[in-house]
Image (cartoon, rainbow, N blue to C red; front, side, top):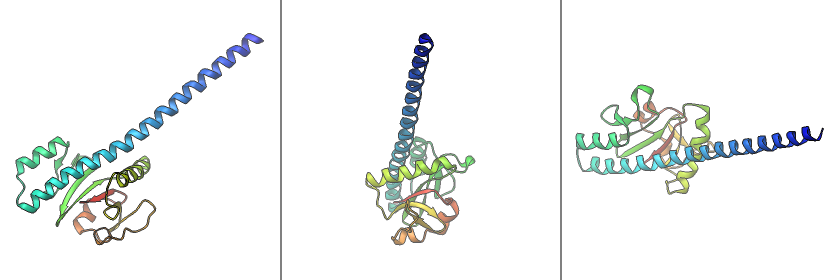
Amino acid sequence: MWPLAIVGIAVGFFMQLMFGELLYEVREQSVRARTDIAALFRSYASAGVQLLNSHSVGVISRRKMQQALTTLHMTWVNTDAWCNSFSSQCLWGGMISGKHIYVFRKNISTGDNVLLHSAFGELLKWGAEPDQIGFKSGSRLIDGRGRGIGSPLARQLPGDVRKFVSDGALVEIL
């Protein structure tokens, strides 16, 4: 009977060790995914600011823009918008509307909710303007708690942005 108890304790110990390691790995992957989204937002935002500066000076060189988009693994959708894969409905993208650039990451599955809310918090922590980042809801942006954002830019999104970006997407206005 004692050998069976010892084997049972050893099996229980190893199962607990394996499950603990598995839970730790799942948590690590979640943190990586969240910070990767925030890091991608920051890199797309910096590219967007460069484009906005070029756009305000005059016509953007098509070749220069294509090179910048290729570096970010994006392609043109039309003359004012670009995204990561147009055939799969633009998970990531950006568009120029008026004097602003709208960078977005769409919410395509229930698992994305947690990632996008975490990325929203990370972006606010790392310096995004609280009145220029939020989740698209109809014609406006809302914060993580579902309250409307007070800035005029976030209260009434331009028509082309409303059509191009789906509800639930995390949007940053530059």
